[in-house]
Length: 132
Image (cartoon, rainbow, N blue to C red; front, side):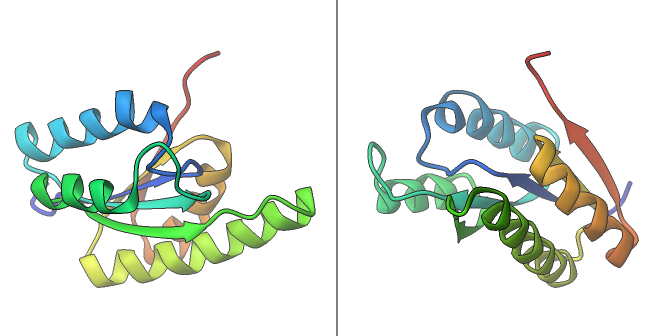
């Protein structure tokens, strides 16, 4: 595979503990050891434990691109549908901008986005779910 540009979609924010303990170290390892160019598309809740400047500094140090979209909570189902629609648009934009040929979806909501992004942009995707 000559083009190793990857879009990683998560419905969690980068300031959440699970992202810092698992996902970001994993993506950093792929970036360094696998020589992947990675762009993260995340859905951000209000910043708390980890501030935005620290996240941006870490991403810059690890040469990972990022687009954070606002996470919508209410009304429950309609807000998720809205987030999926916006995620498909943003993911399609990032895929075209970064010449991405692979989308890694972490969870069911991102998998729905990745499915449509792959149809629009003719790239492959991986549905990554853990915990079952």
